[in-house]
Length: 485
Image 1 (tube, rainbow, N blue to C red):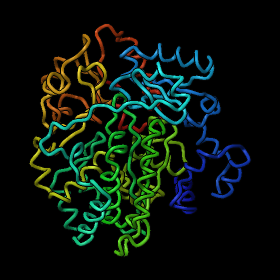
Image 2: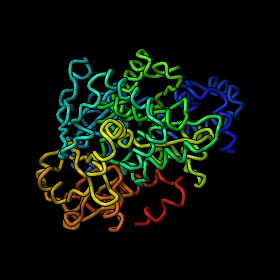
Image 3: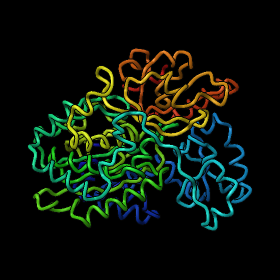
Image 4: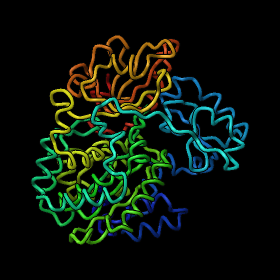
């Protein structure tokens, strides 16, 4: 049944996802019309709607939403935030969202299409009047290369155009070999070699192929994807365009979590400018290469961070994990070959193609090469987003970069609910490295650091994790060993 839905969804219009239409479908009549349009049963549309938190009528009727992510919960700020929001908007007018990417200062909440945190909760009148904007956060690179944070590879759209033209003049096999030689690995958790993934998809013979950016950054405590989409969007979008060129795709999708409204707006604005400059769309720069991409807004389903669940969501299905193999590079979106990459992976591609593979592979440790963004929460004296070389000792991250803790911390959760909770003393013996983490029984994931104070109940934190893990009830067998930790 799911295969049939995938095929029918793809036949209608590959530029606009069925899920995007379901998300804005206002009533039962339009549901019926949409089902007829796609030759699906109305029950299929209703089944999809019932899966996502943001599509429920109860959720839509709220005026403000308080963050219930792990970092804010451990910081102990959210009860005060909830009470102030309820006092302003009413007891039944405040809902919940899981992690708004404001882990660096906590007290996070969502109102009228924007996220707020820190002292913003004490500025509600000004926020309602449109007179207050939230402040930015600390960003800094501790890598000599500054691949992701400070490098000015795309200071202007002309820089984007120049690098794209240079890539168009380079043999596609040479581009793939450069990417493979760089050692770039997926930054979403599993660490699969990016160049190999693109090569596998390029080798497939199919009438259509797709590029998908997984920007459903669901790991509580992580906000690296949010930073890249809001501050370095051209790097991410370049990775999408050049991937499409290499594998032979004409269409891409940016799946951005709905909890990041600013990221969605900025990405859409940047896409519009690229189209105006003929850097996206038909016959890009007269090369004969057609490629466009659209944003798909997530609707509050944590599991969409898993690539096959994300694909199912774009197709308008319930976001359930599919059995693998076949892997997406063989049979992905609409059952066509598909590359799914994480935001951070795509953002690194531009610098690798501009400066060569040596500039990247000479950083890091063993098979864990290049740099990594890390997200430090409000329990650090220096909270913020930082870029470090892979292989950096966690003792340096905790004590030097993070400036130590401002509370008595007993453990840190790295990489979200599936990553493991590690006592601080054990963490100080590790390095930021895919293999080192795996050998110790953990996942690096997005490298989000959520500190657990000694005063915080382990039982309460376990309840919180089980509440999140309940969102993984549709996961496949590959997640079960991790969920049993």
